[in-house]
Image (cartoon, rainbow, N blue to C red):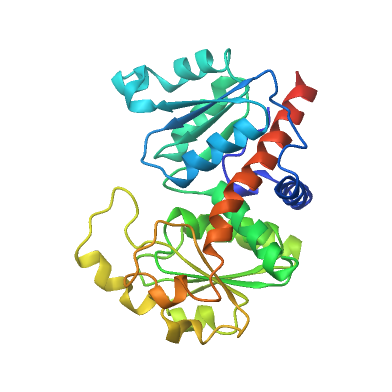
Length: 308
């Protein structure tokens, strides 16, 4: 059974085919209806959500299906039922499962027992659906992916940095992470990304300064400094030199585009003049979650049918 738990679950060819399908579904939203019936897709939330819920709920409906939105805390999972038992039950009722949770190991256990495709709606380690949408957005504005340089600055140890490393490397991009000491990417993720980049023609770099990462970049990205579960306070001061200011953006290519997965905190990790400025493609990025996820759901469902 094919799942999408982390970015490199897709080969370069598969990633490209999904992005091509996402573009086609953006142009013709109702051309593909694999969940007509309707078949049900469960979407579970352990964490708050705006874009993940909106985009998946809409995507499943546009594919002809029924989105079953579940607050996991209000299910028996919230009272201690095992993930494996929940997975066995869910898998007998639904065509696929999307889960926004904490530890990656929780998602992996769900996938091991569900018997249907399981999709990572966000974990502490990875956010692969967001990066699929980001890649679609980059293609929309730059015409392609391979050979472009993507600079991410801020908390390099968070899920977005890890997914940019892996997803960008699969796509043949030159991925640079700019992050302060103590907040740099997991070394094993960097190693995996470097291996992928060696096959795709991309590259991976990790810098201790934002300026080094952003210099002449085609795409610049950032994320909130305070991920869910972290406290504000002294932590924020560490990231001030990594804020996406107009001055930092000026170091990138003059036609660089700006990404932010949202929610954004203007005056913190990104200037209002940047996120609301002419180089920002943040709102296209937010919309493209729906299209990329529709393509992903259709891709996984087709493979599940072949295997059954």
